[in-house]
Length: 505
Image (tube, rainbow, N blue to C red; front, side, top):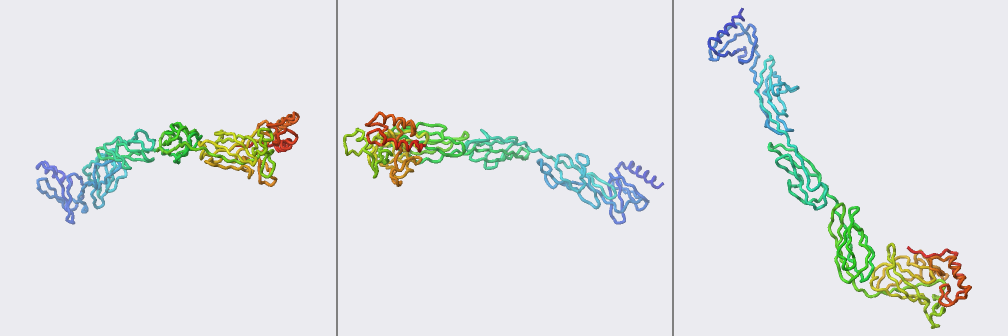
């Protein structure tokens, strides 16, 4: 009955004054509560008063409101900017109160699990919070708008290529944003010389201040190089041995220029300065340009000087096996065979002296005919073009095995080479001991047909000449006494049985 009377009173009061009604409770603690938007249920107890919006108060007895009821407020504060870039966030803080519980809302819908008094917002939308107290009364805050700007899609490019030679002007350019900042001190869209392989990162920033990065690698090929060649001095007309060239990286080749006037033709993509013959005196600067992987390295130079050199003298000493008499002397073969009329002649025979290149195919470079003396000495001359160059010394004699020096010999203005004192002075130690004590060595002879072997063919020729009683300047006169006879057989048979042949590189 009392509840019904109260309802009628409230309706009449509201209608009579045309005002909204708020309620106010005065609990025993002296606190108060008012909210025109909350529906409350009451039980009989303390005084309840109704206050109209024009401040007129009407008192009514017999209703009770819980004494611990507190006013509910719901507000949100942001601890930073609510407009930011993707990847960032803002923490939204709700007001706190005794025994409050929280539910955060995004665009009016509850966010699952968002029940703390703060929420970290990472996406765009309108956020609010519903705060509920211990008596299950709640209030929803005003919305706060968060704007999350997308990051720009930043790209990058290298021009003219991402794989270039050292020193190439390259340009790094960013795209997809408004401004760009590169690592490594690079300025966007501005060329610079490539020096080393490196990875560069560009940070692009758009109009909203949002940034993203892009990474790109610039690969710089190895710098081709050549090992320096020292200055070279030659004689005019000299045949120059090839000079190997070295450098980096693996597979490097070289262009050579500047020596045409001296006889060295220009070369491309070679690995050595080729063998050539000098053609005129003077000096030229030779340039060597290394190339590899499409790149060109720094040019290296050396000076080539060609002079009109004086002739060189080659002093040789060697003996021929069958001609050796003993005590360091050979037969005066030219006198014995009627080529000389001087009974005191100190001339043994004519030989051919050749100089052969020190490298394959060991081509003959110079040759001359010289006279071998009975004491084993021989003097011959070559023009100055062979000066300061290594050559194999090769000796040809009409019935001897062709004999080479053991190694190339540097030819100077006055060069001496003695085959006779050591067997190893001949290539392959291809000599025989004619002293009996290892002190004098001689070239094998009895190669009558000069096929580089002492064999049955030579024996057949000797026997034929013996049967014809030949004498004079005859190749089959093995011992050089002027006659082809049985005395020539022992040397040939001994060498035949020992399988003697010419040895050379």
